[in-house]
Image (tube, rainbow, N blue to C red; front, side, top):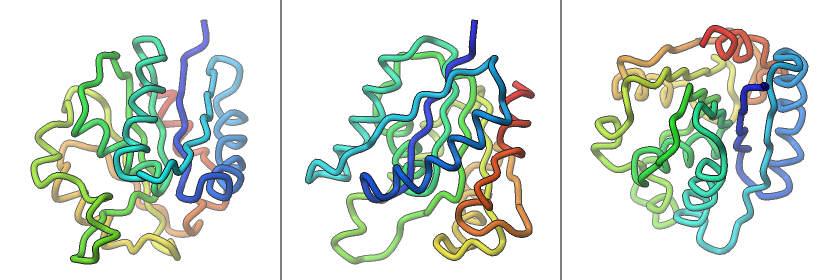
Length: 181
């Protein structure tokens, strides 16, 4: 039986979905037939703060125990918010976050995306957690990765020298970590 993965895409409904489809294709190719990758479209329903968290929660709830969760960029940050704010009743085999923004600042539009101050305490430390960031990411400053290192010290962190925000559309490193579970 194939292991089940859900991949949550970056910002912009259709735009982020289409852009990250190349990441999903790479992941499928590198993982092979022993894995099934579900790639839902996260729509902006006018409440991107709670709406995306709820959509992610529903996708996880609709899966089976042992699901593997992968998020890129905005999708990774909303996945982390979902896991730290909502009750998830599925057993999660692993969490893989790529180019994850750490939302901060006083602007009104940012408030809905921020993690709760105690978010790290609500993440189950028994679930393998991996974060990936390219040093040359043009979208998410590398300093965000450093903040996550401080907040989530038990996680595995993968600094990637080059690849930009899309990791050159090559998720070999992520696939290898997923296979290591």
